[in-house]
Image (cartoon, rainbow, N blue to C red; front, side, top):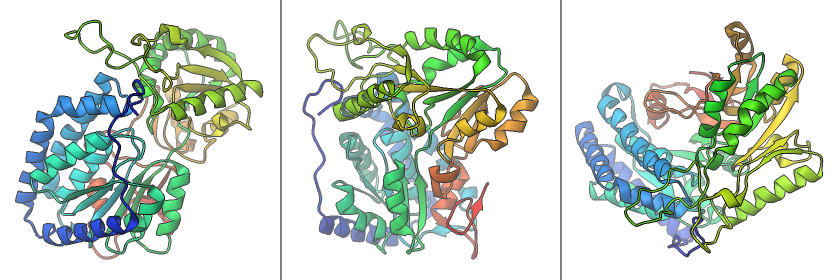
Length: 463
């Protein structure tokens, strides 16, 4: 069902393990031919695919709205980032491939549902540009129609892309363990990522495993509250259903009153509702901060976690009202969660140590720099973090002690585009880092004995 209003939508076919294995072998056949296609031809076919995606931009975006509940602005941005990001690689791929060769087998992609275009399709097209065939699994929770259209457009231009769907447990033998694959690229949660890492441990296979972490925003000796107020609504983009969302604020106790004065008006201004609700057919789609979460089950999980945390001592500071949402009369709203902010979630709560992946903020108060760092490093590694402090020297002293791949000074960090690198510290990442030329290096072979930047069982190498 669509999270937007609970109506039925087309679901993915459920392939069995034998069919998935057949698909992997067929992808290997494609790979053996594609790796010998000259780079100018590969570049031309990828460029033609990008033109086709741009031509169908609005249809792809509407599919994202209907399948995974992205607001219209966010859905179009997801498509645009995929197209614009891959164009950057098309223009600069020659230098990135100097002295490098495709892998021995296709790249197997398993990704979460939240960014089908700007994460999954983007990666697939760069992998193909670098000389590899590509196989991908559709996320179980949504995005199959958008991905099917995108892959069909790529296949029409002659790119070696294969799309499969079904139970992750049933298909993992083919997509993760199969000897035919040259690399496994995974984006998702730590539990599933750990299972993938375990399956890869004895195979020595190239891998890229992006996992979740509790991204934190620290406030220490800070006064520019107007700047923070401007940032808060942006942090709720797509209901914080993104790997670089900031669900945790770590605040110096003596600044808590000023923090609330800056934070609460901003969070109260958030607009939530049906992404396509308009008064008249010709009206523009509403400008919302976010729509539904991915499904009604996730909405209930978040609501239960909030209720349990409050029962165990968390202090509710803000709870949005469904009455303020933009909805159609009588529509199903079971997948919608209004923004919630809790102070001091109990240590027994998942909200204390894990990413909620929804519009739930938690705040922890600290009194010393040591407490600040301990609270910001609560999840043993993260993808991004931010520290807001007026003193540049304080930032430069504390930032290296925050276990996140990217640390912003008063501004949020993200995956980035084009030449910006991306990875994670600690348990938030395993395998090769990506972004910029590192994405190409991760899916190609370099000189003998090359050590890729990343987190590997035998080494950790920062770029």
